[in-house]
Amino acid sequence: MEVQEVTFRPGVLSQERALTWIALQRHGAITEHGWPLPAERGEIRRDDWWRSMVTEEREELRGRIQGFGATVADAVGWPASRSAEWAVEPYTDRFGRVWWDKVRAELHKSGMSWLWQTPYGVVWVDRG
Image (cartoon, rainbow, N blue to C red; front, side, top):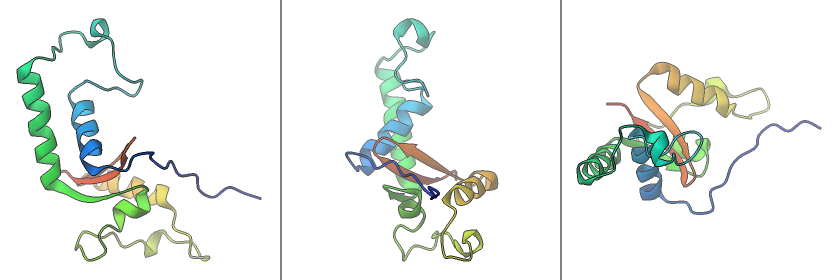
């Protein structure tokens, strides 16, 4: 027996929370190791100016969102009527299984969009 796919399913599926998570991460509030302590943040102060920057980032991300869902498959195919839907046929094996890690790698390689895995879901964002 071989495990083909393991998927993290968020406890709370929320597009707004996911966008906020990304904005906080891009502005240094969250790292790959969690929430840094004040001494670890260095010169980054979380004052009103910083909060406004995070809010602006979230609003900008909201306008560039291409997909959202619990998995990469959900985000890439969401909603099915959008022109940005990814054609997954080249990433499908002879049994009809889609290799989502290859889809994710191709999206990142193209440099035109990001796939963000957050605790609140997967977000596909156009780099615009």
